[in-house]
Image (cartoon, rainbow, N blue to C red; front, side):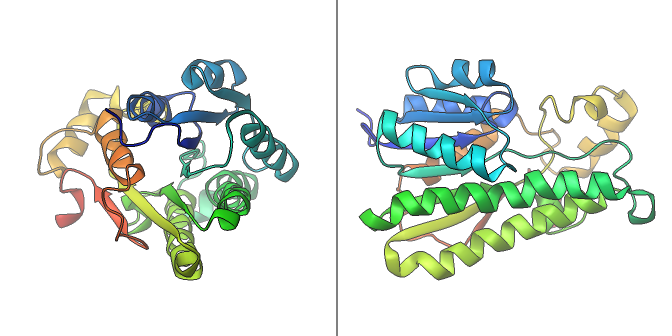
Length: 246
């Protein structure tokens, strides 16, 4: 029997990759799902019997409307998974090579999006003095990825924002944690991992010898969402196969 019957979870970027697998995993845990994604069709597919919406998480009006719609359909929000994120194009490389437009685009999704969605979720959680915000950061926010300057900076900001929320809202019964994956096999990383030489270099750096699958990260998200670690807040849970120990 599920430990979470009827609880409501909002997953951003839930239409593909880690987000899609997370939605399936949280559904198994008994959550009702509100799924936000740029692609409305995939959001609806991931939501199942919940509600899926096409939303740009960097758009304040769209985010506000989406969270209102989720609450009207499913009820107050118990868990928010800030999963939506982008790495930027190939032009978002070393700092002097990164166009301002690419910098702004990555920061808009990876930082502004976390801010807007967390703010909207807090408005639902505060009256009940209960809730958990889970932000998908990255080990790149701890140890910068080479030639991915803006991505690394954005994930460091997302990690610190998760910790800031934890500090500010613990007294209100609301927790906030981050998950910091290493390299994960998703549509976003496919262009790199489909290059055999590059994949071999990446896997050689990982002590466990393999790139993570979305299911590896979804399990960590489900564990946090379950409240089995109810004393944990302000933590960045590293799930990287040992990447950062080298």
